[in-house]
Length: 100
Image 1: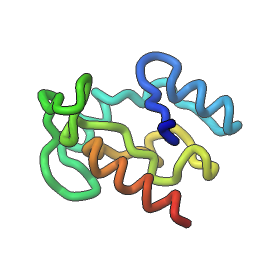
Image 2: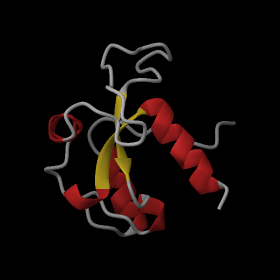
Image 3: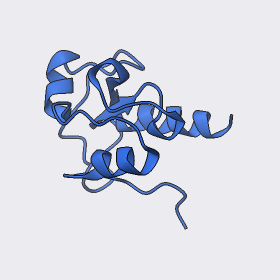
């Protein structure tokens, strides 16, 4: 069984924020984070690609919202705690955080 469930669409981050008891800012959206970060992954510095669909509905270079401090560690879904990241980079970062 997969240890990580993908949360997407409306309510994904809102639901997780509610579960962890952290603040959720509804103005933070993937499209706005893409615009703010100029479509550059803030973890590796390379451009994201919305057409990267190698894994089905998304792929390794697909843009995602990365929470700098994870919601599960008390981070919030706010502008100061989000950055753009490739799905692959975000997943790699999450796996490293899980080792702590």
